[in-house]
Image (cartoon, rainbow, N blue to C red; front, side, top):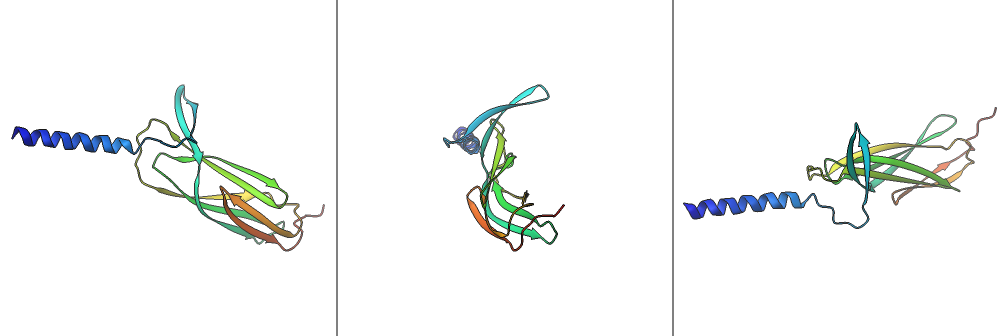
Length: 151
């Protein structure tokens, strides 16, 4: 009986250690920062969001509006969108979505899908083909006429 009890304890401790091992970040490109929330300091891990695909919607209005729908996933139940940065260079829109997760928090180790709608500033653009990149996932859209309102 004593041997069975020891085996159960060893197996239980092994399972406990393995369950915590999934919460360790082993990548080198992690940025750690602190944020204040109600006099509490929490350290976060910031990363680039995992984007699987993008869809570009051109709304039938004038001036035309363009919405990029970015679909991706969080690696666990604690990660969330931190920031969405948009930059336009020539005929290209570069969008960077970053995530954050509390550094020392235990989280569910299940992938969580997300969808973000991102509006592009296309008012005043000339007719033409434009490139869009969201964290390296690329797409294009075309403005068939100048998107300029007369005043």
